[in-house]
Image 1 (cartoon, rainbow, N blue to C red):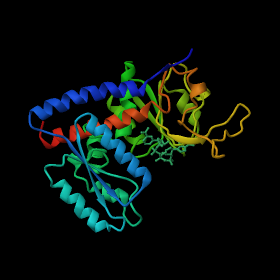
Image 2: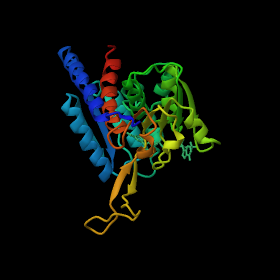
Image 3: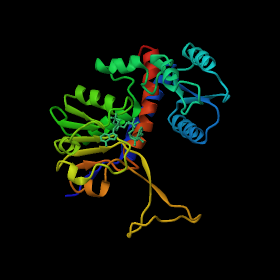
Image 4: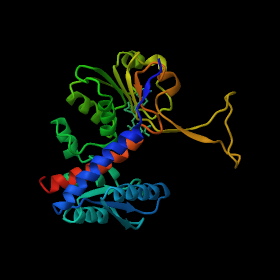
Length: 300
Ligand code: NDP
């Protein structure tokens, strides 16, 4: 049996449509979501993220502006800048672009963002809210993974759920969200003794490891729902296992997940592809959090 592929793009599109309607309603009441991005120094990949964020926001009616601070900005100056934005009523959400220059503690800087403007859900106050079952501002990727499980439409209550990975942005919040939905979560990490035993018992398996295709089909319970959070760049190989070269004579690269898709899809009932699964839904969760942040600020 081949699994049903969960189409992240199409699911994200549906959420986007609902957000457009919600933003229209908010604007009619005089509220406009405004996401402020803060970038310190110049970085090619971060610039690409910013351009993409801007496109995504503006396409659904969210105002997006960027504050660019020089590369030699000191932590104290960044702190002041974030505090100013926290107090600016025109700014309803703040996102700090990574990476930050050396000498600035990224974690500390991120926690300076006021909880009600924290569109990435990374402020310890929002993490704490999650423990209490308040899921208004949750890390985007964790929320995306869980929304994709919900999109399948099966009963989650009581389901054995194995999460591989315990990071603060994915594994831990996913486990709390699944617990909140009355699943029975098990969280695995590099110290887990028999990983296959934990993955094979899972009705729902969520992989957030950062190791290319580590979860093979024989590690998956037949009929399981598999959500692959991983994004790994690997060399593309030909049928003989040799690297395929591009026109510049360099190895051609491709993106794969933490799950070996070809073998997993023969065992699972539902599976997310990489790319095209969790990724596009994560992007839309940032938009949803931006709307949510405005609603929290405006007491709506
Ligand atoms: P981290 O590196 O922060 O965490 C990886 C986790 O995997 C850790 O908890 C680690 O355990 C665990 N792990 C590593 N090796 C093993 C192993 N052999 N067996 C069991 N567990 C293991 O990664 P992130 O959570 O930030 O990201 C995970 C993946 O998700 C990455 O591929 C990343 O690129 C992707 N990602 C995708 C996003 C998207 O939008 N789709 C967004 C964010 C991330 P330990 O804690 O013991 O070290």
